[in-house]
Image 1 (cartoon, helix red, strand yellow):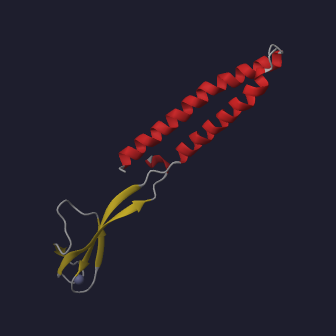
Image 2 (cartoon, rainbow, N blue to C red; image 1 turned 60 degrees about the vertical axis):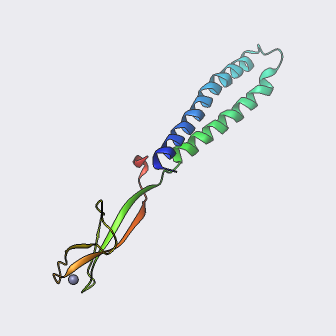
Image 3 (cartoon, helix red, strand yellow; image 1 turned 90 degrees about the vertical axis):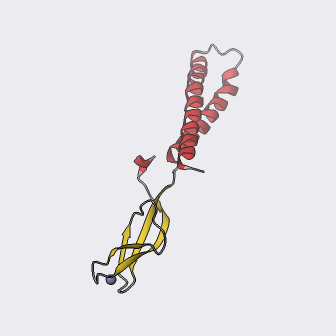
Amino acid sequence: MSREALLKRKRRWILLHLLVLMLIIPVIMGLAYMLAEGIDTERVSTVYLPLAILVAAYAGLGLWKGYRMEIPNYRLVEIVKCTNCGYENVTTPKVGDYINMEKEPCPKCGRPMKVFLIYRERVRSSKKGG
Ligand SMILES: [Zn+2]
């Protein structure tokens, strides 16, 4: 799944649990009010209050889980290696780069360097990365 799709899913997850939480909190407050004021003649609050608290706890937990959900971030890495002395340079690949492609000469010995490896690396991003 792409990063965009995962981000969308995370947003939807958070929104859903936030919505449930926002709906259940007034219910809890209402039930608590009924209990405190003694106007709950049918004793419905004794049944629905723990239920509502349970739902709120579940939604809160889901919200926390959504907030903590990590979206993997990747970057491309290219290793350019000198064919003569073995000097290595780690860069970001440019469009059109391929394995064994000749690159700029080696800064150590002046012989041509070649693309040795191109791979995708997972970036451990901070919370701000999304
Ligand atoms: Zn070299």
